[in-house]
Image (cartoon, rainbow, N blue to C red; front, side, top):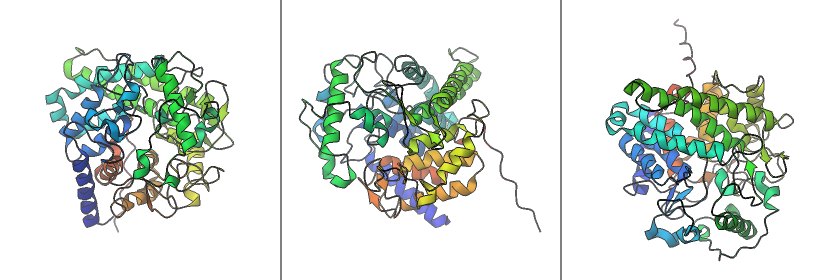
Length: 456
């Protein structure tokens, strides 16, 4: 990539993040998403750390300050001055106890410990001076404990209670379980999202009625996780991110122990053991040998969901870890699936749903479009495996960001922007792809440098 392009692209990405910064956190997009979103902030901090590590630390601290009494980190933290600009808004969740600030009762993938570790590593002196790791570690421990305990499913893996919690809202993985949810809701359904994206790019009205009905049922149960609401799914993406986050939390714990001589109550080995349990359960319960990737599991019926989506490739993040490691042969199969006709072998960019799946739609939200965050995760995974050729192939999507004005997602064949524009995690992860030291991104030991070419 040409030096001038890299510099111009990094500056353009930083301008998007500056525009979307509120003074305490970064909104995903000023029009469509005017509040703070959970895993958006984690991705944003990963990119922001390169230009403004202090702001990256503030991003995560702001989110974690909204942690519920039971340890959950909410999907959305609302700005009451913008309450009518997104639906469902803060009034929908009013009356549910346990949140220190107006927030959703749902959660999102737990990327935060990994993000916090990267943010600390970008500026260890500033992080230490602010006591950043001391501030976030106890909250992250409680967050993970909530997922391991209150959200534990029959397979020993955390369950999600709503498609919105997966981060891949409209994925075909949730179709069968959603059929059990009546397409009727008491709450009037507003669709401000359709002001920012075409109807062919967003979930339909029937989907939204089910989304609202399910959210109503969970809310009316006081967001209690021991109440059956008809939807409890195990997601391979969610579980894999939690395993990587546990490894990162182990690095945080070891750093704190070294800095204060054990004064901070931390357990590096416990976090690694938690990651190992997650990986063992992933291998035991979610692997689909025919599809060559990991699939979702319906915790209500005990049935696996045999659909090939990008979610099932994300466990590749764990393939380069010396411990815990995926079962023998799984990394090779995942790479073969990634490069096969359903994914990179069938088009230019990484689709969110396999091109071979009957639900594949290159325009429709999470049913085909390529997303920058999924590409970022898989790029980090293959680079750690030493597949720099594949990493370079995935890098191609980064070059789309500037001319397409940092879109929310793109057509997996043409690269045309979809959804809203000036999207924060697209900018942040483009910035990270341009500026990061690859060897320091994953929290498990880095791969060796490739050998230098021989001199002639």
